[in-house]
Length: 186
Image 1 (spheres, rainbow, N blue to C red):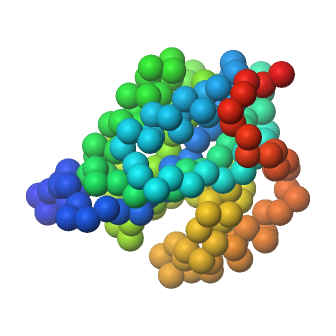
Image 2 (cartoon, helix red, strand yellow):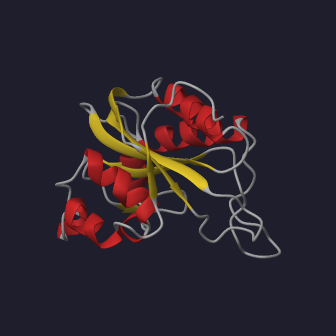
């Protein structure tokens, strides 16, 4: 990593930066896990808004994986990208997150909570630790649909708006759930 990129991803921003974080869970009390994720992110972000909750089939997971609940949180932060990543990874670890891919199958594991930084202002980077904006978000309806609710006009790298991209994914396996995260699943 170049010295200038390292200093950029570790430096505190001079003013609050708009962020978007994807939250997902597919084991245990999924609603409680999403609630815990939101509460944890409130420690590092202000002006928080949450999307609706979407249920989707697992993608690239082990064959026995159950469906995911997914949502997106937007807000502002004064943390550096690396600090925000560390905060997300700390919460995932507290919730029992194991390594991202199973060594034997190459697939993702089920998880109580998954937190992905989707956007950090207009910052673009590719490092071993972090790629921004998230490289897969435009291909994943369970991320794109909730993100489009909160940031419909955002264009990833000058491409179509999220609202336009979301029209491609409508009715492709994501079920919209009411955004009521106060209680546990029944």
